[in-house]
Image 1 (tube, each protein chain N blue to C red):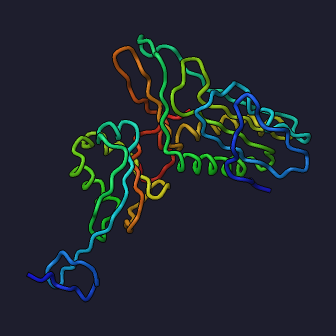
Image 2 (tube, each protein chain N blue to C red):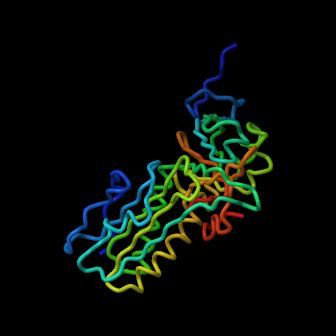
Image 3 (cartoon, helix red, strand yellow):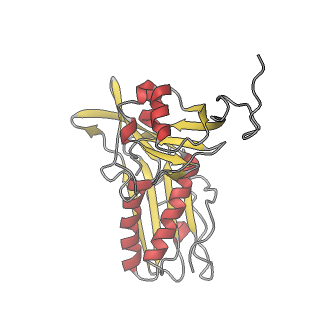
Length: 174
Length: 104
């Protein structure tokens, strides 16, 4: 059966979620937060006695771009639409991989220091193939559709970035 | 001088008899580089009835000339959903100007 509850409040990033029981319906946990995201912090929330594999993705920030020192990143979001797009992303994953158990995606907004995580994804499934494939697809889809923007701040300036895949698959865009 | 009462729209009428043009109020949100170019994150606009998502782009540049270079590369959202074909706007719509995204 397909997903599940909408966005749930995420406690402090380090705490994660309690492990859902085997009988729990599949959960889609999507979060926007200005709190620090610890790599792998979402694993606990997608653990499942029926899941044999958990795939994760951590998006971190580089400290240079084209020779310039990146001091920090600033993330901005159209929050209600970003949440809705992340929920739709989860639904899309379940259509392609119906055996997925739980999906958790958290994106940080606001100021993100270099080397800290900006996005965390954790997905569980009975066998590893689905979780791994879904995790790769999830970050691709996020980078194409979710209305979040990253600004790299350098000494004496800054630049808004654009993903190469921005708006891919959104009909009608140039 | 008495403002003519338009029996078609039954509202304040800006046109002469037979060319009724009512206005509707929409909210426009600007994000990231569009926010900086327009120098605002949120504005209300009064637009004519029968304004659609193509016309609104022209209106946005008229109201916010700084958007001229980047708006063609921006997507629009209407009430939180991507605009993928031409749609008519309605009173109270929330339109968002979305530069190419860079999440993740």
